[in-house]
Amino acid sequence: MSEIILKSRDEIELIRESSLLVSKTLGMLAKEIKPGITSLELDKKAEEYIRDNKAEPGFLGLYDFPNTLCVSPNEQVVHGIPNKNILKEGDVISIDCGVYKNGFYGDHAYTFPVGEISIEIETLLKTTKESLYIGIESFKEGNRVGDLGHSIQDYCEKKGYSVVRELVGHGIGKKMHEGPEIPNYGSRGTGKKFVNGMVIAIEPMINLGSKKLKQLNDGWTVVTYDNKVSAHFEHNVALIDGRPELLSTYSFIYEAMGILSDEEKPFKKSHEINS
Ligand code: MG
Ligand code: MG
Image 1 (cartoon, rainbow, N blue to C red):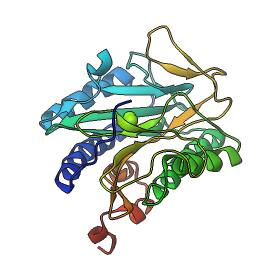
Image 2: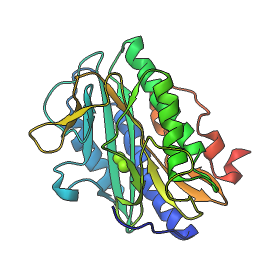
Image 3: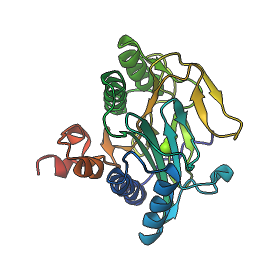
Image 4: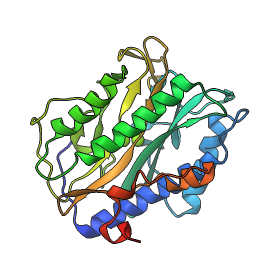
C-alpha cells in the first residue's frame, strides 16, 4: 500500500464533499432495496445519480472493476459484482460505493436488510456497525493503528463473531487506497501513530462463522469459506485537533428507512454538535 499523505483542512473539505455524495447515493439506494430488485438495477441507478451530481463513480475501472457499486449479498464479504440475480426477503446486501470528485475520493459502505431478516443476522449487522464506531472512537491522537484494530477485534470476538484478516481499511485522498492500512484486528500500542491530517476509511468486515475466506472465479467476489453471512460497514474519518471527525454519514439511509439514531453525534464537526 502507498504512503501516508496528510491532508490540509481544504483538502479534507473536498474529501468530505466526495464522501457525502456517497452517503447520498446510499440514501437514494436505501429506498430502492426491496425483494424483487437486482443488484445490476441498483448499480445503474447509482451511476446515474453520481454522474447527475457532476462526479464520477470511484470504483468503475479502478483496478479494472467493471461497475459503480460493489454489491455483496449474504455470504459474500466484499467486491461482489452487480448482476441480474433477484434479491429476496431475508437477504442482506453490503453495498460499497466510491465517488471521485474535485480530485478526491470518497468510499463508504452499509449492509442493508432486504425486507425482514432473522434476529441472528440482525444482531450481526448491529454488532458490526457498533464495532465501526468503536474503531472510529479509537482513531485519536496518541493512539496507533493497532489500538484501532484491537478495539474492533475485541468487541466482535467477545460476541462470538470472527474478523476478516485479508481485507482492511485504508487511507483515502487523491487515491482511493493510501497508507496506512487499517486492519480490523491487532495489538494495542503497535503500528503507525495517528496524527492530525490523516483521513482514513474504517471498514470492519465481520463474519457470523469462520474468518476463513475464498474468492470466486470472477477474480473479484470474496465469500466466506463456510458460506455463512458476513457484514460490512465503512465510514470516512478525518483526524482534526486530535479527535475523529466523520466525513461520511448514514443519515440519508436512516431518513429513507425511518430510523432515528444519534450514533454519529460524538464524531460530528465541533460546531454541529450543539446544533
Ligand atoms: Mg469501500
Ligand atoms: Mg474502503
